[in-house]
Length: 230
Image 1 (spheres, rainbow, N blue to C red):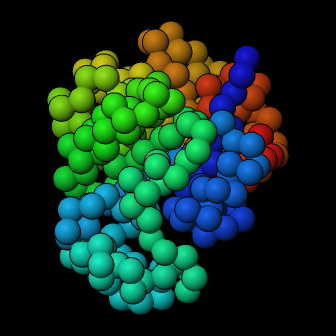
Image 2 (cartoon, helix red, strand yellow):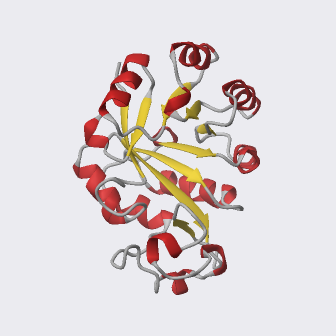
C-alpha cells in the first residue's frame, strides 16, 4: 500500500510554514503532496497563513483579513519570507503533486474553487484528483461542495470531535476523505472510516513511532512537519 507523504504547511519542521521556500523544500525532499492553509485578504486574493493574526510568524501586529495584498508585502514571515498567494504557489509548482488546501478563513470556498478550476483549465498537467479541500469549518466546507462538485473534499476532525459525526457529515457533502488527528486513530476507528468509503489523511505525525503506527494502521496519507521521515 502506497501511503502518501504529505508535507505539513510545506516542510514546517525545516523552513517557515506556508511559504514558497518551505513548499519548495518539501518538494526537494520528495514528498507526494503538501498541506497548506488559506485566508482571503481584504483585496480578495487567497493567501497562505495558518491564522488571521500575523503576530506569531511576522512579529508585527495585523489582521490578515483586514489588509490588502499590497499591505501584506510589508509583513515578512520570520523576517525573511514573503506571504504567498495560492495562485503563486500553484503556478510555481513545476510538476503537479497532491495539494491539500485547508480553508482557514471565511469566504474562501468560492475563490478556492475558481483557482482550482482555472489552473486545471489552463494546464494539461493538473487535474481535480491532484487536489483535496479540507476544513474544520464544516459550514465553509459545505459551501465549497455546493459550488464545486468536482474537487475532492476532506472533513477535518479535531481531538474533541467525533469520528461518527465526521462520517455522517462526510456522506452529507459527498466527501472523499476524513482527516483525523492521529491520536484518535486505532484499528477500530480506521476500519470504520474505510468501511464507510472514505480515505484517511491524518495529521500532524512527527514522531517515528507514531509514523510507524499510522503505517501499520494503513492510513492513506500522513501529514508531517518532517515528511522525509515517513
